[in-house]
Length: 506
Image (tube, rainbow, N blue to C red):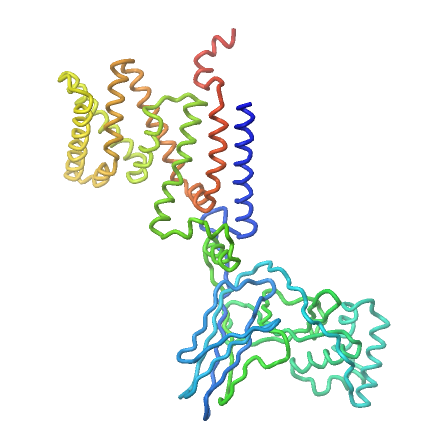
């Protein structure tokens, strides 16, 4: 019954840990490996104009919830201008105002974008258009074209595609040439197509897109065509008829309204600059979670001050070291001084590095052990004896530091980073084992402690594991589950199987 209880508890911990990790990786895009990088689009819109008499009022349309992208960050550089941000169903408009502008005026809007599978919002208030009245000759051409296209199409997509092919064909008929007149500019051409589609009662609209290419400095918006099929808006190239938007394109705003409106100003101009930046995937994931208001990330260690984060980057590795000790002692059967003493020694190795740590630790323990045997002849009580060992250890550390400094071995100064209490307890424990079980057993446990400390050092300084434990601290639940299961292990240890191998053969 107890075994079943432990198994169910461990299984619950594993499920919770796995679910949280999967959520962070799939939904929040937190990186599994350190130093992963992802690109971010930095977009800047620069508005310039020359003011005339009267207060200046500037309206600029902005993206609201761009399809396939997420706005990680945005800011407005508007100087002394007053600023308000208004939202409609599909767009946003920033309104800048200033009572007495002087000289050339410059306003900036900047944002950072990352590609993301944002949920497509449901179409709102889609109205089916009324037929537009054309002049008699043009009306005849429109009716003839729509009849021809309707006979060779099956739905809205094929209708739009067929219409665009005919409107843009090279050897155009007289009817097509007539429909092209007065629509030389891209915006006019898209509006002409929309008016022709209205003859078939197909809702259509103009989508103004910005092509995201690294290094663009004077970019402009490109008008694109969208038609509604009853359930969703479909995009088409107004010249080639190809469906969809170009790769790396951002829908800046929807509609045929002007992008920039300047009141009491002239020579209003807007230019777009695009730059591809690379950031750590970890930083981008944090920004993304902030945008999504994720409650899971709200409880993340990233919310702590940086100084505290650095402390936890070390402390969170200790459960890994503890699990290592459980495996080495309970499953393999390696002996050591104390339960967690090797892990504390391994933590000291983080400051001294492994080789110097082993050398300095061995020197201190060997010298301290000799002096500890001398104290044995003095027949001291327990507490004064422990205090004496501690004082001796400190003196030894000072002497080792001075000696290595004189010899020019600066690395030897790191001996001061060793936990003196741990060294004192190691010396005391080793001397007791020496007296009770002999030098062989004492040396065996001493070597076992250094072996575990070395493995613990390698484990706790692994950059990948450190990143995963810090970014996914719920993995501690997984470690706890394994520790609980190992806690019910009552079988032979590997060293016992080796020790009694002759008996097992019989």
